[in-house]
Image (tube, rainbow, N blue to C red; front, side):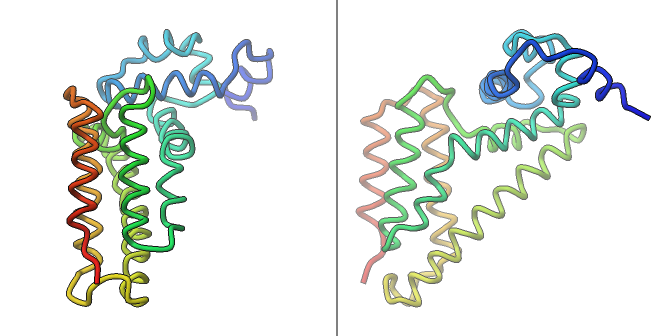
Length: 203
């Protein structure tokens, strides 16, 4: 037996581009967070009706998960490629400068979508918080493993704890997003990048 969503989807062709609609939803979530974004605001930005949203994306929660996938794919791709840099300092610089460019080089909203949504979520959005935490843990683990390898290769001093260094770097990156959302200029954020790299531990 077909579900209502399947019937709606197969009954007539969609009159919108799902990828463009999802990109518009991402912008709304990024500006307002999960709970701050109303269905009315989402459908208006996406240029679709509520039945079309449900038929194509599921409910608001499912839409947000898909928006997070898009955010990681298109906005955070530099974080994956940064791990391929040959040195730990190179990894840090790529991450910091990628964050700098994302926060100052486009018309995208400032701050981090994941951080915004995790902080704002209440008990009614526990699955959203859990998803954000799981994604964060995965990216943190990848960075820690890269820094552990750097230490094994002699690229970091023996006394440095890779997990603590990764946590420090991610705190700076998230702080850049918070400061950018508060109106910090590119020059001010560049100073953070320069200071962090100047203090980076090397042998």
